[in-house]
Length: 560
Image (cartoon, rainbow, N blue to C red; front, side, top):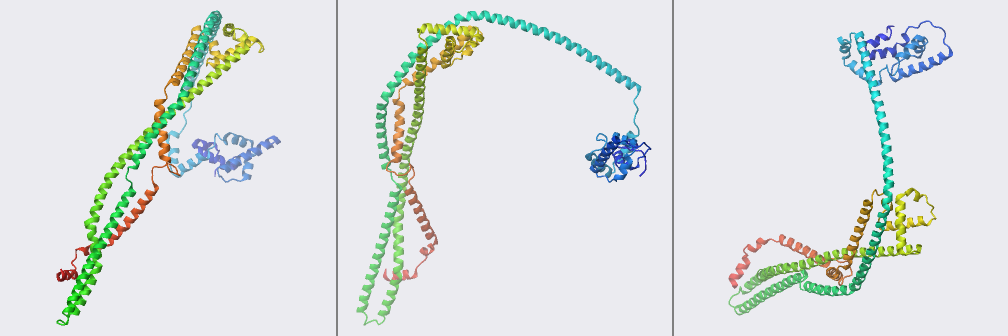
């Protein structure tokens, strides 16, 4: 590798300059210098560590002796400080990218391009243009500073005007506070009227509630008697319904009778065959002397009769099924379908009745809950009101009119000078009256601070009128709820409760259910038996019934 100065590599490309910085440190000319002092020796060791760290981070092989030799020269150390830094060296990512470009043979085309042949120098005209631009920006900055100064003066003048307006507003507020005293007195009179109306309506509502409570027992008993009548009717309807168990018993009875009929028919045919055979034997005894083959004929007849015995029971069973069993079952199924339709209609009627009673129960329950809530709220309101009145009577020994006038004057004073009222001592009588007034207003849902911070007398009147209308509306709702009749509503509710309680729990030790588990079990067993019979029928060869029986035909020809 040549000893070309490393600055030439920076002119060509950054990666080559980076490699030169890292690899040719040992080949930089060392100029004769004076021996280093101890401070420079410490800087030298630190620089050596930095160079070693740079070479290691970029996986570049090096020798410690070459680095120490190269860094002994102060000029070399200055060059290293200037060029071997984070702002001049390539990072690992940039070095990797450069290696890929170099491996793809595209670096030579970029380096040999005409646009990199030289760097254009800075001209005097460009320097003049930059200077003029700086002067223009400086003048613009000065003009903006002047505009900001004018805005600051204008802002100060506006602040002074705002202070003057605030002083005028405070004077106006002090003038208005004197006029609020009379309006506060009117407000107290309105509050007194509201209290009087509230007491009258509260007493009326309590009387209505007590009357309804006395009539509630008689009304409930009459409704329960009506429910008993409805339940008895439902029981009669359910008793007249045809059950599935009775239908299965009828089918079983028909099958037993058909089997008995087939057995009787088979016995009758067997008896006839026996009688015919006996008559033949008697006639054969008379003609035994004339015909020596009579005994052989009797034996053949006996064998034929014995072969017919197994078929007699099968044929009799088939005849009984075709003539009686199948038609009876069809008629029974038709009758059962008609009865099931009637039962379904009856059960649907019962279900609709129960649903109506249940819905009525829910609605009446909600109404009773609402009525109970109104009653509890009314009782709580009455007790709170009585406690408040008794507490104020104990605290005040003066008549009621003087107490209310003192409340009004204290409210006006608190509104006119709230800071002075806050500075009064806690043990004074006036402060106690103020707290009592705040408590009373809070009971009625009126904030003392809202009245005190009201901007005008009209605002105070609006607040009090709104609260008065709200209280009147609440009292009217409570009175209407207490005065509403309970008979038409409790009737359907009691019917539903009695029907559900009696119909679901009658003669039952288990949870209420509309499903009969015994009937379901019997139906499941019947389905299993029917499946077994169907499998047996499928295994039979029904073609035998249509085939001709030679022995039977011979027997019928001979004995028919």
